[in-house]
Image 1 (cartoon, chains in turn purple, orange):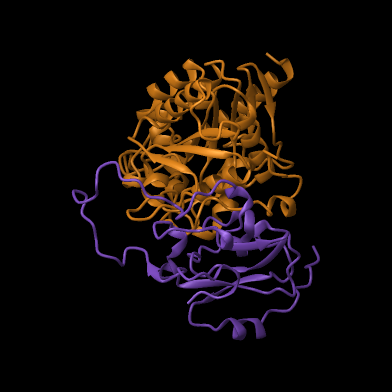
Image 2 (cartoon, one colour):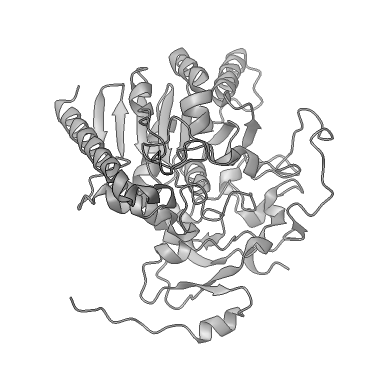
Length: 150
Length: 317
């Protein structure tokens, strides 16, 4: 299901809430959920794809079914300003080495904040309905808009 | 390096995320923008406590957690208590030499919504500030109890429609003014108190870094636009926050040691508050002719507050 840089064995196989529902009185008291399977000492120096995520970490889950519209990313126009990265509420903009390299469609909820904050002309991120194929969306990308004279 | 480079966004974007996606906050929620920014602003280990609220219930839905750091879910009122308790134990164990990794830098952070900060956890927060622990309390201020269906809190501003202060033919929504939490926290003599907004990412990241680096109890009130209860389109979160800071509904400033006030953002064009109100569904009744006077009162209050902040910055007292 997952493609690209964030692909791991565990990724995106489970829908949040799809497993057996646990009643409030069935949850063990003082339950501890470990985010990682191993001890991780230098977390802030590990990239997500290098981390030993456990099954409890929501990184291994997906909320893709929330989405009715999705952002599509056009690498040719992007200037790597990282506005979308800093304001994405769902940690779904993947940036590596100061470059925006794609969208994490397992975690994106389709809010559209990234499209609103994109400063390029035309925008390098646009919203399309979920049914539209990414290639198809990219082939029909709008032309540069001329500035209206005031 | 304890501090992430935030000179520009490209540098900042090399930070490795420690707040994972697939949490259940609404699409376009500003809570996660703020939390992500805090966790990206530092490389240190973080110990985080969360009051009950949207952030807590959405990021730890059993059997999942979205936190890659030590995080505890605690009652509605006592994130401040839990964070300071952990800090006290950390110090004690450091002194006794029983920590497995004594040199690792650890920062203690508590998150609370406005309900748990302004109302329910106020006494606990005040106590923690007075005891002088080395921690940072961050209030995610969305001006209502969004988690339970949008009831009024003491952070709800005048004129806003909430589910327990409804607008209609006899009422224009909440009639009481918003509590000035920043001034109250500054009056505790805290070394760093600030009000920040996620649309100004740089001043926010700087403020977070300052608060984390400052020894002693720090308080930060952050504006967190709520798409569900403020009633606007999820994609407009940053736009609404822009309007909030440019209309000076939420001035961005810091108070150091309870006295020195610095204004961190001066809008080039101050927009009338009407634009901010008109963009949200919770204020739409104010544009009926019989409630126009409420808008004028809100504008008057904002102007007076801005005048006060500017004079206080100048006077340095």
